Image (cartoon, rainbow, N blue to C red; front, side, top):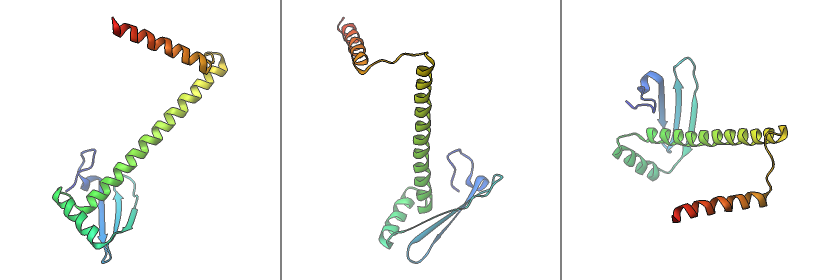
Length: 131
């Protein structure tokens, strides 16, 4: 029995059905059983040797090829979630900065002024480090 990242046994949360046909097409159908049902099928083709080698590697790691494919899919989705969350955060920060500027709660600093201020800050840090 495999476990989900949340630690719940897979049989309590979801059922994963895997079919491999004779030409190496893997089909995944995931059914969630916690108040809603969602079926997702992922199909892709690989040559027999690639499939065989991948199955050997997965088995050596104590998992099935379907486990490895599912874990990769979940990792990719998590990476995308992080990108989406960061993009949303950045958009909110930029919008908040423009709102402050438009309402007069902040002032615009030119590129030159910002560079001069940054150089002064760096010099102050360097001078502290020398002492």
